[in-house]
Image (tube, rainbow, N blue to C red; front, side, top):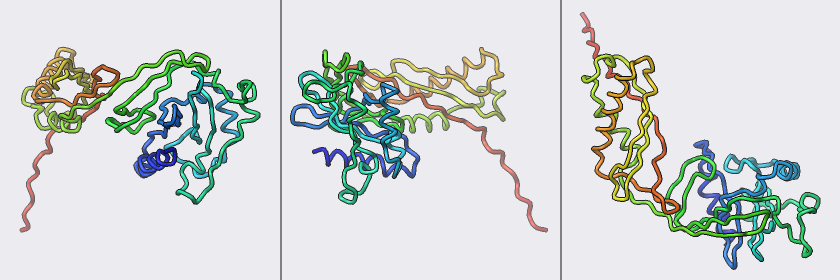
Length: 282
C-alpha cells in the first residue's frame, strides 16, 4: 500500500516539474492497518529538529515537489504520534527498484524523544494533523493546497492524540474561474466608462457561492487604474458584479462542512486594438 502511495505521488507531482509546480508530496501515516497521506509535516514544526534532519540528507536528485528533501512515515499507536522513518528524497523520487530505500538514522537526532519501548514520540509537536484519502477534488500548485473526499483532523498536544474529527468533502461542478474570466473580458462594456477607452483595467475577484451554485457574495477590487476617483471605481465594481451574476451555477467546494470561497483571481482587461489601414502598393 505504501509503495502504491509513493507511485501516486510520483505521477501526480514529479510530472509537474516542467510546469514549475510547487505542490508538495505528503508525509505518510499508518493508522490501524492502512496507510494514508498526512498533509502536515510535524518535523517542520521544530526548527532545530528540521535543521538536524536536513544535515543528514543526501541533497541528491532534488525535486521541487519536496522542498524539505524527505518524506516521513508516522504511526498513531496508543494515542501517540510515533515517527517510524524518514526517507531521503533521493530514493522517494527514484524510478521503482533502481535505488534502494535511503533512510535517515533516527539515533542522535531523536534520542530525547524515545519512550521506554524505543519509539520516537513526537512530543515536540502540538497542533493539527490533516489525514486525507479518497479522490482528490481540488488542487492548486502550492504547498498542500489541495482537498480530498475523506479528511480526518487529529488534535495533538505534545505528541499525544487528544481528539479527532472526520469530514466528507465534496465538489459540485459548475462554472470555473477560467470561464468567469472569459465572461468578464467579453462583457466588460467600456462604452459605460469613456475614461477607460485607452486604459487597461486590472481586476481582482472572488466569489462565495451558495449550496445551489448561486452567488452568496462577491469581492471585487480594482487594482488598475488606481488614479480614478473612488466613485468611478465603485461603478466599475457594480458592472463587474452584474456580469458575474449572469453565471447560472458556480462550482461549489465544501470542505469541513463549510462552503469555501473561490480562489481570488486577477484578470487584465485590455482596450480593443485599434484598426490600422493597410497601405496599398502603388
